[in-house]
Image 1 (cartoon, rainbow, N blue to C red):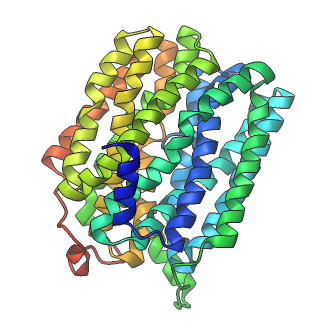
Image 2 (cartoon, rainbow, N blue to C red; image 1 turned 90 degrees about the horizontal axis):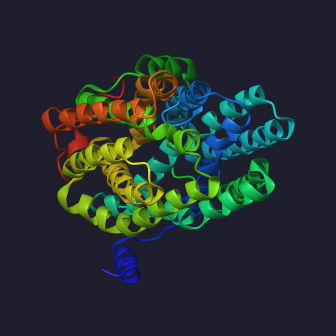
Length: 421
């Protein structure tokens, strides 16, 4: 189906209310920032004199499945359920602007250690993710969530078609630090969109016993609900797998093969084009098949992809392989989010999305450091071998232990875990 026809079909399926429009706009701006920063950050850290193990440590703190966002996720989701979505998103935006400012200062001064406060702020800013996921679940009906999550993914990915190459050109001609002030400007625009146009979807809780509520929350914050235990474990294993290999992908290619920022931008662009083209059909697939088969399909893609990354060094081959990576991501994200919304009642979705991210992050945060250490001590292939092993473990958990949720919303009308669990 041509892209225009897919968009027309999607528009006919979704009612673009104010909440969804605001989330789409904010997500598009986030996509621009991610495309700018993602392609240059690891080479930038290496240029400041970091070893691959040090890069892995920084990534373990705030990158793919990092410790800092892991600790922040459940708080962000819980506060969003208790006090509203909008304040959490505004605070996250301010934290991101602070992080980009610190990165710029570290680059101008050539001070690797200065990255640490920026890492802290950027990790905290990631609390927007579970809140965004909850907002989308509230903005559309149960039978359309696969399409809605794929639409959000699409608008995040579209900037990746052209922004990474532009960021690579700017980084090569003017230096890495010119990227970060531009990111601040885009984040300021995102802050304005949230403040001006996003209407609150949750009324503040009337529960006055804040101390008791916080205590109950702390008891369950990083523990999977019993009905979702194996699903939580599968997501955690997936995060660990990809954090070990893909989490250092651009840094590994820079250090091992000497790829330039422009070449890294091309790899990111190939991934973005594939992701953008496949997002909407995959969303329909999730709506039609349900999330579990799509999760299994997604994880299975890791096997051929890791074999390519371990055995090939030619730029053209690695660029082509990014289509497989994009298929993995384009299937995993909407299927994971739909799975949660099908089994969790609306009043707890922000918290559960946060707890899911937190549990996965607690398990996965050492992965990037381990991957960097394996590179420094064993060699280039070792992080990808680890990625492959844990992806196969994840696939086995999905096949044998994760059950398909019931269709529709009848499941959370009495079959989910109690709120105190």
